[in-house]
Length: 253
Length: 116
Image 1: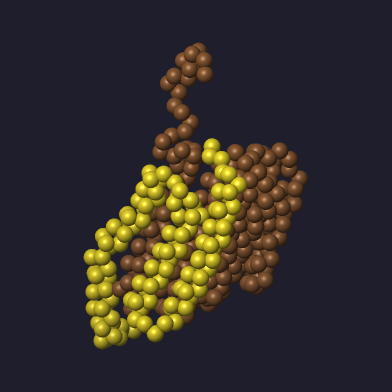
Image 2: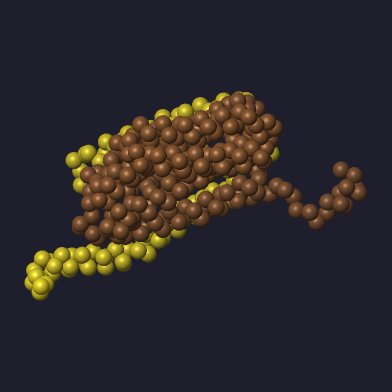
């Protein structure tokens, strides 16, 4: 760097920081996740406090469908694997792999929400509600709060997929498509109360996202520029991590 | 921006599959543990241990916390420490809730029926 250029850059903070050698975005996501983890921690602690001394608390194994929820847990674990595979693919410069694995992750998140809508429908029609007792209140608040995170993750990853194939406009288009598609899939599943619909409606949503993504041009990620994919992956793994805890505390213990 | 060599990526991919297998096995174990003929507290402790292991695997390998700077690890550990602290802060309330329920239950059963 010449003396003139060096003088021009005096006083400008470096883009990289010793705190986070990768990026400020990653640091920001970690701080957000830490704050979000405390929200979940507060909810889980309140759940424990309400449940601990209550002898009338129902046995979750009798009230809730553990087999279905175990399937949902497995699904989220699989979607975490597809997410890391998507990141590994773009680090190799493999755009097709990124697109394929991101789409599988989105599909996994969508099916999770479809199955949750199916579960909620049956619980509500069996008489459970958020106002009935502490069991219902804590169950619907905890799983609902987590479901909102999954919904946000599906839209977020769809926006990243859009950016991967079509830049900023692509991110907006695919984010909106996924948001509308997921809401429709949840609505259809909840009202039909059929398990196959809970599986097929989110797959249809992912298919629409795939078709729309095929029309886009001008992606921005490469083997060297994939920081946004890594930050999105952090969010998705966090959603998986929290579900591991919710599954254990609410459904199993 | 960090560049990853093909050898590093291949190693990471193998690790991801190993972690996936472990997570699946631990989830299966969790489902098995609830049917063991043990006390509720023992089952609860085993489930918490299994869930903690699964969460640590996701954080360390999928979220790459094992390869991050120490500062990021501290940021990630802070909520866990605070949540444990919160649980200990709630312990007196837990005792109070237990007392309320244990006192309310016999009184409710022996109380005269309300006048019509």
